[in-house]
Structures are given as C-alpha cells and as structure tokens.
Image (tube, rainbow, N blue to C red; front, side, top):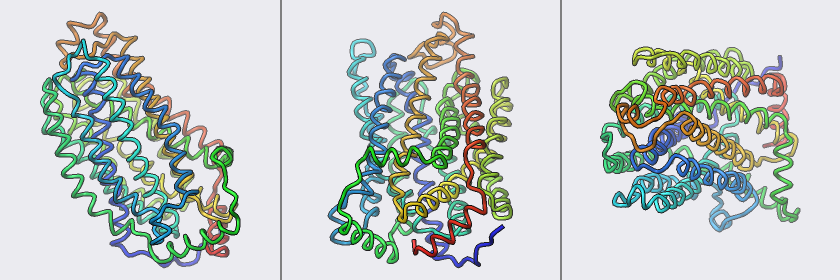
Length: 480
C-alpha cells in the first residue's frame, strides 16, 4: 500500500476541537427537533395525522429543491462580503447559526388558543411556515460549515482528529438534548414545550460561541478563494444548476456514499422521532424517561468512539470500517422489535450506540475521500455543491420518516391527540395493532433501510486506501 508522508497538522488542537464542536451545537438543535416536533403537533396540539404528515411532506418537497440549490449558489455566486473582505462561509455561519435557534423555538409558539377541531387548517399552515423557515437557515448553516472541512483539514490524520472531536462532542450534544429539554416538559401540557424550546435556545447560544474559532477561514483559504475568483474571470461562463446536478448525480462514488448516509440518517432519526411514542405508549412512562433511552445510545457511542478512532488509524480503510458500522447498525435494530421493558430497551439501544458511533465517526473522513476524488478529477474544490446534495438526502430521509410514521399510524389505528397509553387504548379501534405500529416505525423499517443502504455501498463504493493515497499525492501536486 502507498504510504502518505509523515503528516504535520496545519491546525492547532484548539481549532480542531472548536470545529468539532459544531457537532455539539448542531446535535443540540437537531436532536431536540427530532425528539419533540412531530409528537408535539400530532399528540399535544392534536393536529390530524394526515395533516401532520402532509405538512412534513410539503416541507420535504421544498427541501428537495432548497438544499442542492443553496449548495449551487454557494459555489457559483459571489456575495459582497467575499468581494470586499474575502470571506466566503463565515458570515453565513455566524448569522444562520443564531437564526436556526430562533426558528426552532418558533415551532412551539403555535397559538394554543386555536381550536383543535375548528382551526386545524390554521395549525397546519403555521406548522408548514415555521418548518420552511427552520430549514432554510439550518441548510445555510450546515452547507457552509461542512464546506470548510475538506479544504481546511487536508491530512488524513488531521481529519480523523477533527472527526474524533466532532463525534464525541456530537454525542454530548445528543445526551444533553435527551436530558435537559425533556426536564421542562409535562405530558398533556403543550405550553411546557415552549419553556423547553427557550431553554434549548439559550443554551444553544452559549454552545454556538465555541464553534467560532474553528470555523474562521484562514489565510491559505482566503488566498485560494482569490485564485478561484481570478480563474472565474478568465472563464466567465456560468455552469447551470442542471448541468451541476448531472455531474454530481452521475458520480457513482458520491452516490453510493450518500446512499449509506441516507440509511444511517433515516435509521437513527426515525428511531429518535419514535422516542416519545416508545416511552409514552410502549413503556407507559413519563417523557423524562427518554433520557434513559437515548442516554444509553450515547453511552454506547461515547465508549466506542476511542476504539473506532484507534481502529481507523490502524486499518486506514474508511470503506471497510463504514461497512462494519453499517451492518452493525442493522443487527442492533433487531432486538428492538421484541423487547417489552425499559431495561431491555436500554440494553438494545446501548448496543445500537456502539455501531452508531462508528458510522458517525467514519462519515466525515469518507466524505472527505469522495471530495478529494472529485477535486482530482475536476482540478478544483467545490464542496458546497456536494454538501448541498447530501443535505438533500437528509431531507429525502425526512420525507420517508414522515410518510412511514403517518401511513403506519393510519393503518394501525393510532389516534392523534391522546397523550397517554390509557387514552389510546380506549379510543383506538385496534389498540394492540397501534402499539405494534410504533415498533414498525421505531425498528423494523429502519432495519430494512439500513441493510439495503449498506449492501449498495458495499457493491458500488470502490475508493480503496491505495486510491485515496493516490488522490492525496495528486492534490499535493495540484496545490489544492
């Protein structure tokens, strides 16, 4: 195997940790969103299951256009702050990080005096509006912060170091999101969700401060942007959105990578979205017990991350470890189909967390390998475009999650607006089937998706360690 020259880190540990803390910030918001939003509107506000699912679907269709379009704009449009000061991504990161928190809190400020029966369409309209606003600023933040990664951190070990910080801090963010916001929620009292959302906003502002040093664009990057602007003047013809889409979506390595990303995201988020349904209806416990359920995932991920880091450096094979983590996640879903008590769920989720830690750790460096491969073929870096399409995959996943939960609830007799197990059992025409439906969207369908995604990645992703090292050598020759 080709060996890479001894690597000297370009960025200090403080900068690497600071960039890694963007996972802490992002998971703090995204996990809180996943835990509560659909449950809040369907169960606490009483929005009809069909309308709640439709709102998610409309939002997701918008996302399907919004995410790659934003990625395209980031790479092919020059904003005034770049023209005047050279910075490309930092202004978006600073502004949209804060707006992301504000839009998250706004989701829970639907007027509580609206009638659950007569004002269903008003609730529906409000839900769609805040979801769209939330998504726009979240995508602007994510695309810009992720676009820094392959350019700012160029060495394999430096990327692994950054990813190690990001994995551990992201797990901390998920743990905090599972512990702190539910402490302020009382089942059957929608107004308490506002208190929880405001806590998320205030703590999020503090967490946001930590990411600022790591997301500044350094002198080398500013000079590279300048060279790219000069080249663009020499070649003024703009590349169309659809031409870019064709290039991106015909790249087999990128597509197979994001298929695995789709499976890992959908499996995890569908399980996360199911958390309050599991605790409320399968276990009949208070919402605060979500802490025990998802705390066990995070413990599994946290204790396994140093192992994944060590094995990753020894094996030097991102493809192989991604496959191991993918198959591990599939196997970990299987016990959740059968367990019936809190301890059983905790053990199952602990095992799941071990594989999740591996997939979480391996995703950024594997994506970095893909983007290096693209840069070698095209002679320049345009990561925002590819991260835009990766963000699209997340949103397609949200379509599948909303559609799955909505269809399962309709077909199994789940009744919206019933916040306790006793009420569901009394009002559902098929209560036992409704309870099994929760297992379908918490474990069975995520397991199938994870298996198919991992098999497709195994079949089509062919960036071996030798190819990765060859790309590194070529990038050094090109000076990118």
